[in-house]
Amino acid sequence: MPVNYSGTWDIVSNVNFEGYMVSLGIDFATRKIASMLKPQKVIKQDGDCFTIRTFTTFRNYECSFRIGEEVTEVTKGMDNRSCQTVVNWENDKLVCVQKGEKKNRGWTHWIQGDELHLELTCENQVCKQVYKRTL
Image (cartoon, helix red, strand yellow):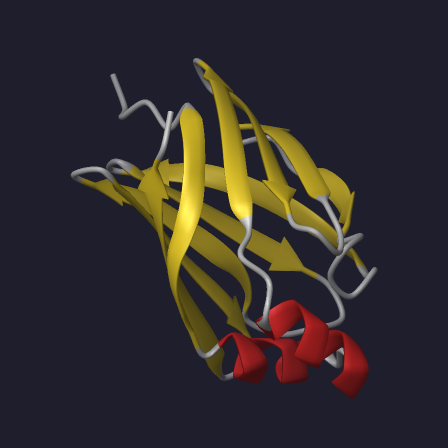
């Protein structure tokens, strides 16, 4: 059985978020606000069904998916683009591919100890975030 991602996670590290947002085409003012935020993720996992909620004082974002099922996702709270999204297991990692206007877009989640790691990719930019489990 794959690892259980359920829990509440608070960000502790956020490397190259600015570069990632530039690659998405996010405007200057929004980037400056977003770079100061301390997101919290609440993940609910029921077998291969996930809901990931990201909360900040500026915007909130929610995505729900079932492993292996492609869905149309509108990335509200980020760049508001529509893309075809599919998430699969690669060992204990959740790997998301987002096909759309931007090339090489997606993310990978994995857990090491009490840390949730997230790599966000878009075009030639990679943002690396680390979260600590709080609940």
